[in-house]
Amino acid sequence: MNALIRRYTPDGMESRAFGFNGSAMSLGNMAGPVVGGALSGLIGIEGLFLLAAALLFITCAWASRSLQVPLTKKSL
Image (cartoon, rainbow, N blue to C red; front, top):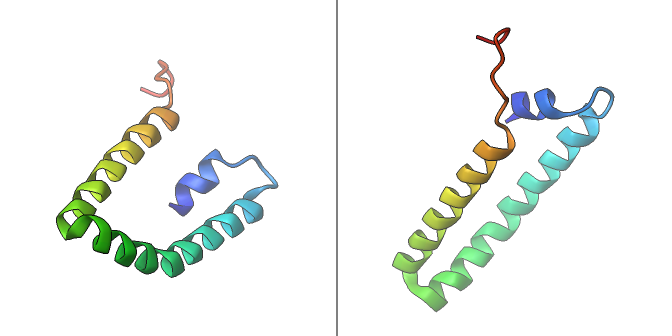
């Protein structure tokens, strides 16, 4: 993750990007179990796994489209 952040962050903005990444990770580690527990009570464990799979698929598709670098003769 840090390599991607460094690669796609403009020069001079790396520390801000790494700070935002660390804050988002901490927030996810705090809120994830609470939200997961509440959702498992509403939609069940199976539903929670299906929701996580759908979100993972959407995130992977978005990241692959957003981070795709066009191929040039020089990069081959």
